Image (cartoon, rainbow, N blue to C red; front, top):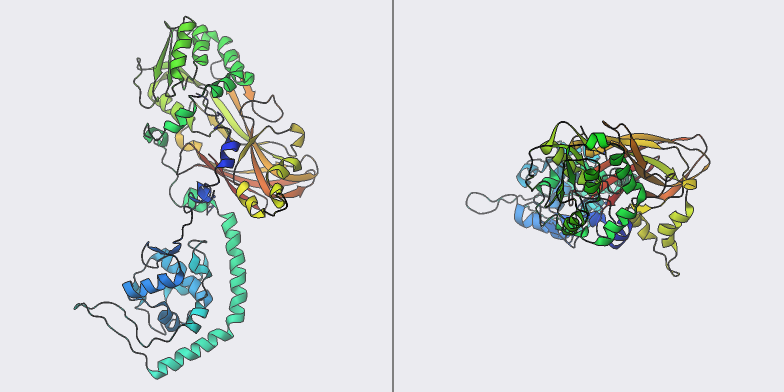
Length: 547
């Protein structure tokens, strides 16, 4: 089965799906429409967006949350702010300390005036959650305008009553003095806060994959696709029931003729062998294998197109050598214990989209006999940079003027959607770099999620508007006649085309300039057949969703 089918064309589907993308809110520790891109970062924000200090309950305003903390947990933020001399900076540290260490209200209320509480450490200047509403809350304004309370309800005693604390006049005047000092420091604090907010915005951009890809362990590989139920995977296989997808794949001569030539030119490899075709679709690869001398071909596919495959096999008088089975390879029972060769056309956009390679590796580990081979056996993913102002204008600068209206806020959302395009070779402005190599005969599932630093050298002066990815496939192992094909811009276009990652703000390069970058590719936590890809080049970092 071809995992690269139009879904219905990644760009078309993505343009209609502005729900997914965020939750890649850290790029070094774990990672954006902000899922369905914001759901990968922290779910689409709803009305209730202020998280309680002591529970997971959310409130529509900060005041409501503080009232809840006072009534339920006996914690008065105004009293605490005055007691601990919390200015804006100290309040930010306090919030990050509470979010990180999760102390109870009892633990916090142990700290008295004069104590050095743990949140004074500069380590708590780093936001636990850059989107935390409390980090932008003006505590000093609250302390200045809220009425002075002369008591605070701390905790319930054993009799169910409350313990009150009464402020003396000296304590009252001391608090007033502290507020005056805080006002005198406000100008400096305001400047620091402004700088902090700028840094937080940079962190928000640079660390988009922390939440989505590394705040938890990478998706467990044993095997995510294997654990999907038939209902959960129905949409994927159902999409391959449409005959137009198979027509497009069969008409792709680069794809189909490469598989045919590999088998027809290596009949010694197939003679009298048992072959397994994973995701057989219409059965074209299975019939190539049978005509190349295979003794038995077992063709497996979960899509309903498998019923046509059965008819096609009979129509070509190959039913004595080709057995077609409906079902997922992870679920079916094969009529043999082991096979000699596994063939599959599993490649998707950006090579790994749709995760069908997971199923091929499952079949390899369970059914491939010692000394057996999987074909194609090698592949790689490459990146280049393009200078194509017209393509950038089509998708990005278009939003500057839409029928006389500015819609520039759309730009940051549009660039999150990786697109699939035929890129003109003359628009490529750098050399190519391989960012991932895969040996299908030996690789592990965890190898399919990866990070890689790379460098691109400009071949001419120009502006980098996008990064472009493509892949190369090789039929190599045990072949007397080796076959390969490429989906790169310099080669004949295929139905995979190229995957384009647009840059919101293009930047200039000169001939010979070396630009450093990093790519991070993970499976989406919401849908393991989708990909979340983070790209950094120069000072630009963006997270892209392929769904």
